[in-house]
Every structure is written in structure tokens, then in C-alpha cells.
Image 1 (tube, protein in one colour):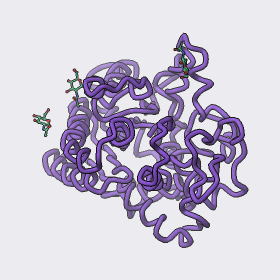
Image 2: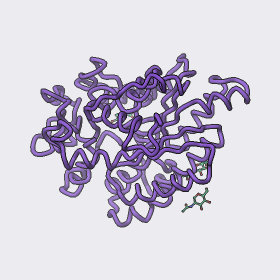
Image 3: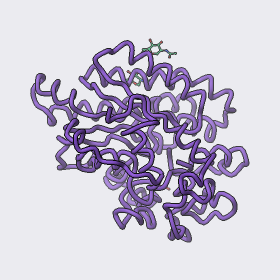
Length: 355
Ligand SMILES: *[C@@H]1O[C@H](CO)[C@@H](O)[C@H](O)[C@H]1NC(C)=O
Ligand SMILES: *[C@@H]1O[C@H](CO)[C@@H](O)[C@H](O)[C@H]1NC(C)=O
Ligand SMILES: *[C@@H]1O[C@H](CO)[C@@H](O)[C@H](O)[C@H]1NC(C)=O
């Protein structure tokens, strides 16, 4: 997902749309020591939900010095719960990929774009604004907004392919190394729907016509990872589109049957968050709709012109762990922790990562 700029966000329909985007926990990520050594590395791909720094690396190297500054995730109170400072994550602390890395006994994944880092225990290709479709697809529809142009699914796999020689050297070594790595692929597609609904102004029915090609792009990406040697691949669903997710789930099942010696896991992000929204108290959340950070006020505490990290929106709510939504678009660390736990141990990952 992106940091929102579009003014169309403030229509009631868009607000309802974002309500699903915003919510996303508190359980404990149980560490299973027997499993902790199962994976020797982890590689992640995705959008702002999985961002751990690539957008900031890219923006700092841009000739436009205001680009980094304009990223609200580089301002307090991002990072207030964990890290104690903004860490180029769209949360008050860790994101799902961080919790999974920690549970597996791996270091937090460095952003793949950072220079001079050792990626042999993992790298995160995820970048804010990422889409399943290539940017050229949106350019052909008249989109110029550069935020979508930092790294599509296809580009992220390219980045990973370029890293491989430095990770494992010879072909035989790489085969063994990649077979013992965990891949988190996505979710992809959230921004593809954001662009179509909010920038192109398409109706939900019109965007649904594009779901097959968006899901297909994801499936093609998974197959490319398998061709590179990936064996354990987690494929998360996305918010808030049931139509997309049911198609994705079906395709994942097809891949599971097609590639018998790989383990493609379907992580049901959507169903878990949906449950939290329906029964917030059960999960320790006071209010499923109101963003913890932002100066929008009202029911959602969301206003595109007064987003978290902007002047006037630099303090968080008193207890971020009692909220689902951190900034109106992305979940709190508490939510991320619950999601990671449910992917590692079930029930929202089929099969669970640690099974
Ligand atoms: C620099 O980046 C900022 C924030 O993205 C943008 O508003 C501005 O137009 C850019 N300036 C130039 C010269 O590209
Ligand atoms: C899905 O991708 C495959 C492989 O690239 C292609 O042959 C097929 O036509 C695509 N289907 C759709 C609906 O885009
Ligand atoms: C993206 O572009 C690459 C290179 O041109 C192409 O091979 C790939 O099929 C494209 N992906 C999609 C989803 O259109």
C-alpha cells in the first residue's frame, strides 16, 4: 500500500474501502526452538505492508532531496513502540516479516537496496508502492505517479536474481541454499486496486475484470521463484478483496498440486484481519476503525492531508497495542505480531510455516 495522496480518499466509499486497509495484533509469537534452525535465510517481497527500508534507500539516493522528507514513515511517531525512532516501516514497530525472522532465529532482514550489507541470512525486496503489474501497464492507462514505479513484483524478482551469486556462489550450493530458505511472496495486488479505484476512478466491478491478470502476475512470480530454486513459499492474501483472494487461493492450490516437492503456503491475511475487525475486543482492541496516529479526527481519525507523521500529527494514541490501525492504512505492531504467529503456527496459514 502507499502513503495516500489522492483527495478521492475522502469520499464515503473510499473511506469504507480504507477501513479495510487500515485494520490489520497482540498474541505472542511463540518461538519453537526445534524449528528455529530449519531455515538458513529468508527472502521477502511485497509492498508497504512488508517495507523495511527500501523506499528510504531509494529516496535518499534521489537527486530530489525532499523525496525522503516527504515519506511520512520517516517521521515520528513511526517506530515509537519498537526501534524508538522511525525505521522506514509503516508501523509503530515491527512488521510481520520482522516477527517471522525473529521467530526463526534470523536477523531482521536488511532492505535489498542497501549497500554493503550481508544478505546471506536474508534480504527484503519489498518496497512501498509495489504493484503486481508492471508500471508500464499503468503508464499505458495514463498513470504517471512515480510512487508506483519503485519496484513491481517483476522488478523485485530481478533484484533477487541479481543477489543470488553473492548469497551462495555455485549452482549446486545455491540449489541447497535456496531450498533451505523461506520466501514470503507478497501480498501483491493491494496497490493495483488502489490505482484503479482511487487514481483511475474505476468502479469495483470494473477492477474485478482485471483480477485474473493481477492474480496471474502473482502466480507467474511464484513460478519464477520455484524455477530459481525456492521450495518454501508463503503467499499472503490481501485486504480487502474477497474476489481476488478466492482466485489467488485457488491458484495456490493448483501450484501445490503441480509442484509436489515444493511447499507453497497460503497465508490468509484477509480472513484474520476481518475477524479482528468483527470481534476487536476478543483480540484486545478497543476500536477497530480509529487510527492510532493521525490528525484526521472523527470515526476513523484519518485525513489524507493530516496523516501520521505530518506536522500536527506527530504523536500517537496512548496505547498503540490496543488499536488495529496504526496510521489509517497500515496495522499496528500488535496486529503484525498476531499475524506472524498465526502464519508460523496456524490457523491462518495453510500449511503453517512451522509444520
Ligand atoms: C521532489 O519531491 C517532492 C516530494 O515527492 C515533490 O513534491 C516535488 O515536486 C519534487 N521536485 C522535483 C523538482 O521533482
Ligand atoms: C497468465 O500467464 C500465463 C503465462 O505468462 C499466460 O500464458 C496466460 O495467458 C495468462 N492468463 C491471463 C488471464 O492473463
Ligand atoms: C512485466 O515485464 C516483463 C518484462 O518485459 C515481462 O516479462 C512480464 O511478463 C511483465 N509482467 C506482467 C505482469 O505484465
